[in-house]
Image (tube, rainbow, N blue to C red):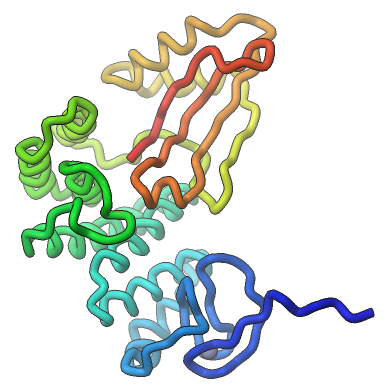
Length: 277
Ligand SMILES: [Zn+2]
C-alpha cells in the first residue's frame, strides 16, 4: 500500500528531506530550526555552525522543543528580526515555566526583555510593528514589563510600565499595567499561576474544586484572591469545573487567556482568568 507523503519537507539549508511534525521544526540533519525550514538565508549559515547554536541544540537542561525555539530566536536575531527573536525567546520562557524550570525561564524572560527593550529604545510603537505587534498602544509595554519583572529587573520594568501608562487611555491596559506594578512592589517574579502551558491547540481539562481552593491559598492577597473567592462562591455541588488555556497563536496575538470555568447544565456560569497577556 502506498501512503501519500504529503507531510515531507526539504530543509532549505542542507537539502535533507524529513517529515513535517509541527509549527516549529528542527532539521534532524543540520539542526536548522524554523517555522519554515524550507526557506533559508545562506548568510545565516555561520550562526547555525556557531558554538552557541550547536551547544544549545544538545543542552540537556532544555527539552528539545524549547531549544528549537531558542535556536530559531538566535537566527532571527542575526537576521535583524528582533521582534521575532523576542517572541521565540518568550515562548521558550513560558514552556520552561510550565515545566517547572523557573531559573532557566527567568534567564529567557531576561533575553526576551533585552530584544524587546531594544525595540522600545528605537522608538518603535507597538501599533506600528508587524504581526503580533499589531495591538493597542500600551500592550507591548505589558509584555515587556512582564518579561523584565520575571527576570527580576524591577527598575527597568517600572520605567516600561510608566511608558505604557502614558501611551494608553484604555482602562483595561491601565489595569493590566497596574497589576504588573503591584507584582513588582511585592518583588514577585513568578508567572501568574496557571497549570496548562499554551500549545498549538485550545486545551481544556476537568479539575476538582479543591484545585481552586489551592489557588486561593497561596494568593491570599491581591487581585487573584478576590477573583478566586468570588468564583469559588458560585460553585454548587454537581457543577463541573474545567481548566482552559487558549492556543499559542492567541498568546502570540496578545489575546492569551487561561483559567477556570464553572459549567452548570452545559452553560458556563463563571470564569476565573488566572493568566492573560
Ligand atoms: Zn538541514
